[in-house]
Length: 127
Image (cartoon, rainbow, N blue to C red; front, side, top):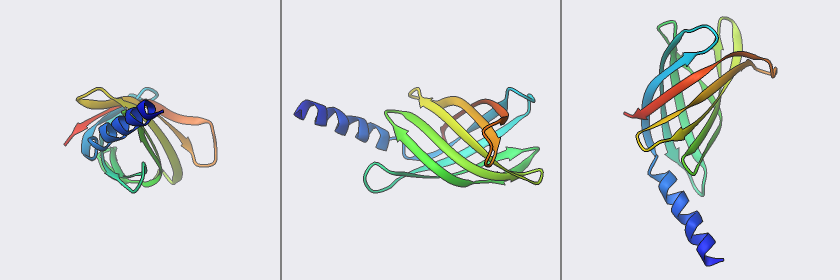
């Protein structure tokens, strides 16, 4: 039992090392468009995390409202809402830390719908 607790503590400590600012790029598989992405990971009490994220869309910076932040064993999931073209959209990004950067995929839906309106890839390294 104590070996399991040591492994859990080590994984938690490794994730804490990922606190900080990250910047990179996203690219749509649907439209071919893309832009920058920036976020901050801030550890909270226990195993919780907080994040603020912005990205560029058509050369405009888009602010988001973070809905969910998960970071465990170098795997990240962020879910956030934003406004674009008169609609409220929700993006869900997933990625893995490879020692140098997070790399992953995203999917965007209209809030309240499960039908994707966009999807693609993203990457972000320490800023």
